Length: 72
Image (cartoon, rainbow, N blue to C red; front, side, top):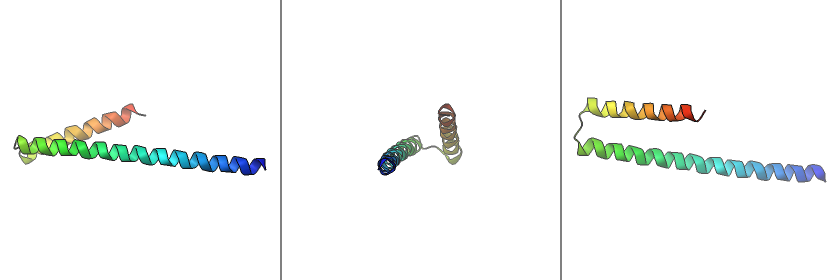
């Protein structure tokens, strides 16, 4: 009986953790999509050329890399 209860608890914990991870991934994807939209609007509004737009993207990539390093 105890093994069955432990198994059910493990299943519930796994389900909950997976749900939390899915929600976190969705939130991250939404944040990235919003940031890309802001960048696209900036590129359009400022009529940036290709080189300037590429530099903006490089800076954004560096920002994400730094954020990733801070979370380790």
